[in-house]
Image: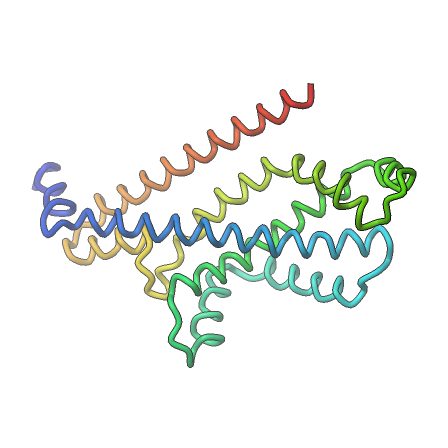
Length: 228
C-alpha cells in the first residue's frame, strides 16, 4: 500500500481525522485549566513556604506544603492520575476531563510552587526593608513590592512549565480519556497501521511546543527590554 492509500485509510475514511482534532481540543482544554489550577495552587504554596523561610511563621502549613511537594515530585504523574481516577473518585461518576485537570493541576502546582518560591526568594532583602521604611507591614510589602517583581521574573519559567504540562497530558489515555494521543491510538486500532497516526500525533505535539516556545521566547525578550 502506497503512502497516499495509507493516508486515505488513516485519516479520510470514516472521517478518522476527527479523532485527532477532537483529541487536540481535549488536550488543550486539560492543559489550559490544569495550568490555571497549578498556578493558583503553586502561588499559595510558594507564599506559605517563603513566609516560613523569612519569618518562621506558618509552621504547620509549611510542613503540609513540604509533604505535598515531596510526594508529588517524587511520584510519576501517571500514577497520580490513576490514583485520583481509580481510587479517590472510584465510586463517583465524574468527568474524565475534570479528573485529568485536577491530576495535572496538582502535579504542576508542586513545580510552580518552587518556581514562585525561587522568584520570591531571589528578590533582594533590601526590598523588604524599603517596604518597612514606607510603613508597610509584611503582607503589604509582599503584595505591592515583592510579588509583582517575583511574578515578572518567573513568567518565562511558567511558560516553560506549561509546555512540559502540555506534553505530560499525553498519558491521559490511561483513564481512557480521548485526548490527542488516544485519538491517534484509536486510529491505529482501527486501521492496524501505527506509523501514520502516531507520526501525526508527534507532529501536532511538536508544532504546539514550537509555537508555545516561540511565545515564551518573545515574552523573555520583551521582559529584558522592559528592564532597560
